Amino acid sequence: MKKNAFLLKLSLSLIVLFLICSTGCSNKSKSPADDTPFRQAIVKYLADHSYGMTIASIEKITVENNEAVVISKMREAEGLYALTVKWTFFCKKENTVWTVIKHKT
Image (cartoon, rainbow, N blue to C red):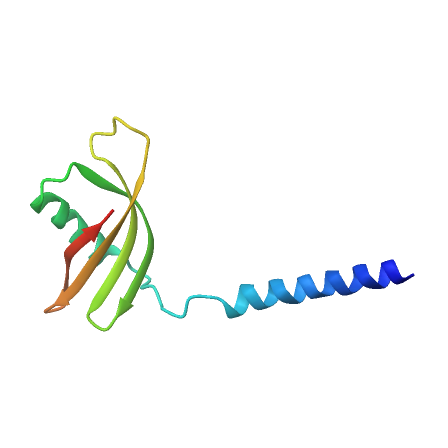
């Protein structure tokens, strides 16, 4: 009987912990619904710096005022390799246009 009560308490505790983490630990920053301006800024940045990379996917965009951080998976532009690498782009909004200031791999 004591074993069943312990298992019930443990199960309930784990469920409560899961619910708290899944709702209370979420990121408060909002990602824009349209990532097109950021894709255009990244493409321009890659061309300006002669990087032979292309965007595989955009994982996360965090915007705060006129600055943004874009986390993207990148792949080699020629398509020779199936590998992707994560790049972080730091963007700034100037005259309604987003531009990439720098990146980190």
